[in-house]
Image 1: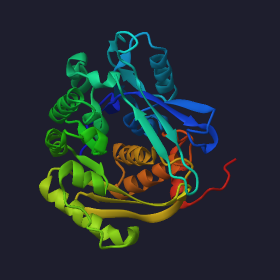
Image 2: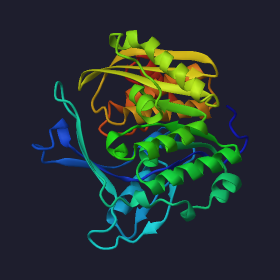
Image 3: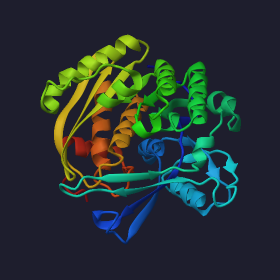
Image 4: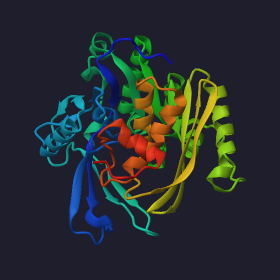
Length: 357
């Protein structure tokens, strides 16, 4: 993989912004009465790692015109050092467009997390290539990397076409493409053939492909582990075989990354990572990590991994930084991480939690 010599944006990503509402003190939704609200999307969560560490990033999205929730989202993106652009869509009355929201119970101990998504009337479903100047974004300004998530690709037929057109333009302009498969069964219901074809076309244009066992199998039809190995350690060879199969189907992909997770309880996970990059295997063996809220940990991994590639680090170092970024995010109330510097992430990888004065 070769990063362009000159560019304005380190990462561009298409996304549908919304808000996340979480009960304080990790209470269940049914018994909580105080809530925290934040702007959210999987794709902006990924960008936040690079944006916080000084790289220039931009979200391509849509907003509800004259909406105070849209103003809240824009303010939060600015606070996180991210740029954004996109059309202002008229709400169209009380039953018109709005920003998606989800209500999340972080879980505690043996009580697992629960997330309820409400995406009816979501303005992000209207994303259309005609609302963006691709020549300006990819040719005049330039981007080192286009990041696409399966969540936005599968959101609607329009967003799927939007992602595909972006990927085609990125490929033609020499911009690298990362694709986090992010399979969600509720998005795929009754659309399996349509989305399998779309995801395969996106994967064929991808330089960095990211997923897990379920993602590779259900989104791309790659045969995964058959369950004969016990524990994460025993399954690593199974995962390697699955990625080797994916490599045969997708020979132009330079890096395949895979997270490894085993839930002990809501407060404690085994967390690891695996990557095949330029024909060589790299891994972070599963380690015990403390968890405050698991939601966003995968996005943190992707954000850290891509930051490493953008900094032109060796593949092994990219994977380590991604692992530690994911471990960082799950210690937070938010579903995104804002590291103050690289050393904060490397300290997590090294197991160094000593105070820094």
